Structure formats: C-alpha cells, structure tokens
Amino acid sequence: MRVMKVEQQLLATKLEPEEFTAKARALAETHEKLALEREQQKETRADMKKRIEELEQKRNSLARVVQRGKEERLVDVEIQALDDQGIARTVRLDTGEVVEERPLAAGERQLGLTLVTGPLDDPAGPKPTRGQRQPTQIH
Image 1 (cartoon, one colour):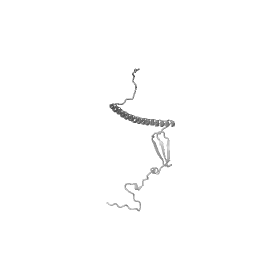
Image 2 (cartoon, helix red, strand yellow):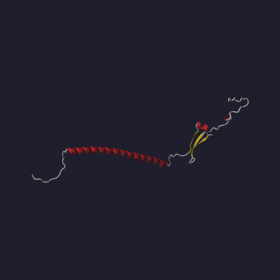
Image 3 (cartoon, rainbow, N blue to C red):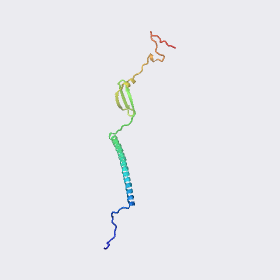
Image 4 (cartoon, rainbow, N blue to C red):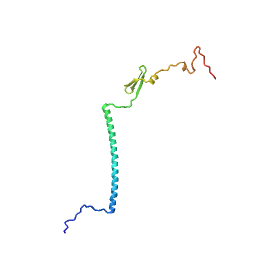
C-alpha cells in the first residue's frame, strides 16, 4: 500500500467526559442568553410600537387641526343673564362672539330678583301700626 496524500477531514469524534461537560455548560448558557435576548427584543418591540402609536396619534391630531384650521382651547367667557328675555348668553371675552344662548335655569332667574326692604328689615324691629300693641319685652 502506498500513501497518496495526508489531509484533514471533518469526522465525528466521541467527546471526552470533560469536553462533554464543557459543551453541556455552553449549551445551557447559550439557551439562557437566547431566552434573555428574545425577552429584551419583545420589550423593545413593545416600546417601539408604543412610540409609533404615540406619534401616529399626534400626527392625526395635528392633521385634524390643520384640516379644520382651528382647535379647541380654553377661552375666557362671560355668562350674561338677560332677565327681561329669560335668556343666559355666553360671550367670548377675546372676540365678543356669542357662543351660546339658552333659557335661564330656575336658580338663575331667582338671582335676578331684587330685594325690596320693608319694615321687617329694620334691625330695631317692626314699627307698630295703628291699633297694634307694642310687644312686651321681659328683662
């Protein structure tokens, strides 16, 4: 027999016990790292999805404002009671525009009543009229 050539080939080789233990540890570590990486990527995807949703919501809101040419804002208003007409009127203080008119509520109508003072409103007490007796004060 004659040797034509010597070379290396990749062939299955039985592991020594120490090699087997090292490979088993490496497998366990790799499995743990893989699970951790998957969890981190899952969290990252959720964060990315949330950021995208927030940006889409902001974009949609801005698009509505641009399309309408106006937006909702807090504006100082004055609510006026037109007692003679029984109407409550809401007026913008920045433009003077009437934004609402509605009937006065019962409690609002009573606020428009003026008080008429009479003898019972005197702190000294009521004045006797003719034919009335003065109340007796007991000391």
